[in-house]
Amino acid sequence: MNHDVTVVKCGGSPLIDRAGLCRDVAALASAGHRVVLVHGGAAEVDRLAQRLGVPQRRLTTPSGSSSRYTDPATLEVLQLALAGKVKPELVAALNRNGARAVGLTGMDGGVLRARRAAAHHAVLDGRKKMIRDDHNGRIREVDPTLLRLLLGDGCTPVLSPPALAEDGTPVNVDADRTATAVAVALGAARLVLLTGAPGVLADHRDESSVLPTFPVAPSGPVGDAAVGGMTAKLQAARGALLGGVTDVVVADGRVNAPLSAAFAGGGTRVRLAAPDTDGAFAGAPETETTTVGVRPC
Image 1 (cartoon, rainbow, N blue to C red):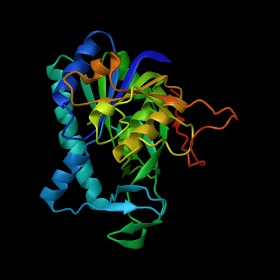
Image 2 (cartoon, rainbow, N blue to C red; image 1 turned 45 degrees about the horizontal axis):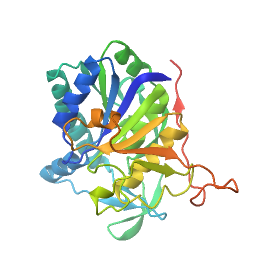
Image 3 (tube, rainbow, N blue to C red; image 1 turned 135 degrees about the vertical axis):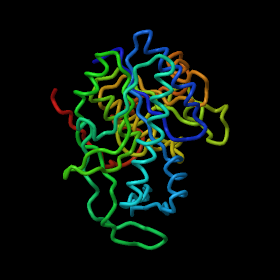
Image 4 (tube, rainbow, N blue to C red; image 1 turned 180 degrees about the vertical axis):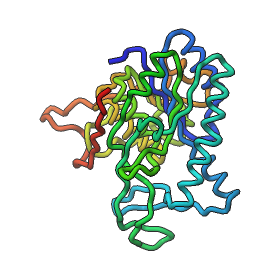
């Protein structure tokens, strides 16, 4: 395990203080910490899509999960927004503050490889349809070679979707799951998931109800606090814990030095739940799990 490697996921919420995050990451890097910054950018994708006249729609599967419908036009918008705007801004801010930041997508060096979603039924625009052109996928393999080379040379990698599909074309992947897969592949000591809240809340309407720790069962629903986007965060946290990452934190991305605050005990530490007395875990029925391979260096 790389005890000085931290993977940080910065979402696309406009509430997150990206300037403060970049100052914080750069200061930690200068102090010897090795950080990989994984980012999304949903809000920027939506803004650019609106400017370009590309409608944004959601897919709902029979199981109730929802995702962005990444048709070919939306895939182009996503690449322009993430690699053309969000990433350069983060890299520039990190470099201004003294870090040696390098921007990457999952396609660079084959860092992320994913399995494209097969044709499937989903609800789109209120109607159940067979979806054949959805460029979403699930990460199936991480090659950490390039990330390790950059970290070993004192650089701070800044990574985002898309990943490479089986046919060598880009495919959109979830940024939270990307951060988890990268943390596991690097053997990182910690994963910090930054959000627009102080952590996991007992009551999502009350920010004073932040929980210092939150247990998740190894399978099934992640818990009653999983509301909206927090569900994806807790599922990502569980995946990291099952993959061997020992310290997983859901932390406030709105504060001036969010990573330092998380290191100092801020946010919510996510833990795997202990079994009940009968050996079962609190929670529910088995759900689908995904195993991500790590390509040998």
